[in-house]
Amino acid sequence: GAVVSQHPSRVICKSGTSVKIECRSLDFQATTMFWYRQFPKKSLMLMATSNEGSKATYEQGVEKDKFLINHASLTLSTLTVTSAHPEDSSFYICSARWDGHLYEQYFGPGTRLTVT
Amino acid sequence: KQEVTQIPAALSVPEGENLVLNCSFTDSAIYNLQWFRQDPGKGLTSLLLIQSSQREQTSGRLNASLDKSSGRSTLYIAASQPGDSATYLCAVTASPQGAQKLVFGQGTRLTINP
Image (cartoon, rainbow over all chains, first blue to last red; front, side, top):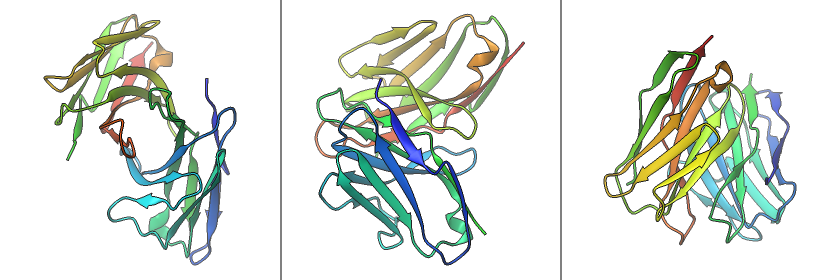
């Protein structure tokens, strides 16, 4: 099946710094990638949707200047958390899909971000 | 606005039992519904995808049904095993047009006791 990877799996950073999370589709070309955030024992909340070569579409309440998303190629999307604060600590999961395959999304393993 | 609800929030059963997890959604105009499994601290594994025109899908000991008109789906797990312990999430896709966003339920935390 389709495989999506994320890097890093865990990251700890200090308040005020920026951190970048990568999401890669390993064996298919992802026309669309999605970024989700998950709080402990909660469900996934969609943050933004990105299509290759175009600007991401952010969900209501998500600060686009704080969570920078780049989808420069059909196999890579990045999420950069800028000027991180402790409240940004969370589990971030990406997913990817390609047009025509039943619109099924394939999920990465997630990245645990801790801001100290 | 589409809302997805899963009942129960948590379930604990002895090994070997058959069990049913429930998912309901408020807007029946869905394109498809997916069931996922999530282990603690891990990403999501897709279990079954049901298109809106389908009534059920089966994979091994898992069977998912869909009643779009009533806004319900069930995930049936036969002969449960300790390795089935995980959180199970259902999610619906609203439309083939646009962003095809997934809307998730809160999940059911399943524990299978040896």
